[in-house]
Image (cartoon, rainbow, N blue to C red; front, side, top):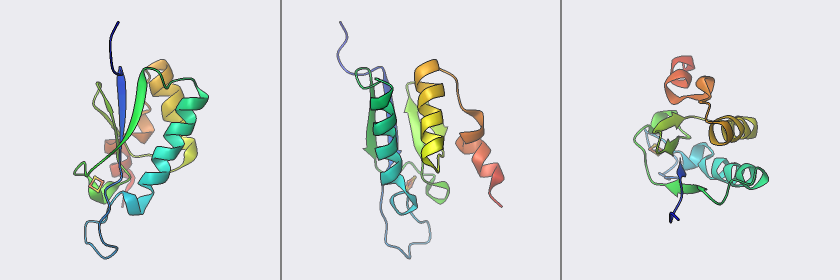
Length: 111
Ligand code: FES
């Protein structure tokens, strides 16, 4: 029997002052993103082996809110509840990466 969790979802909730040039995930909705993960994971019965945690800065501040899932090391940038539900249902339940929500793909959309 293993102790601990198989998958960790880290959601950046770092908060900087409102006028900070890099911004911060907390001010871009990081707290709400984590709440949505908790709700969706609970709804899908994923709380036994999968855990969502708030994290400090993950060094992609300008692109936040940032999420990284380990042990796969997959980086996401969800913005809506629908994005979070898609990550939970596809990545966490079925092991399928959600390509259009990956941090590197979302960054390409940013003008
Ligand atoms: S504040 Fe979230 S990645 Fe730096």
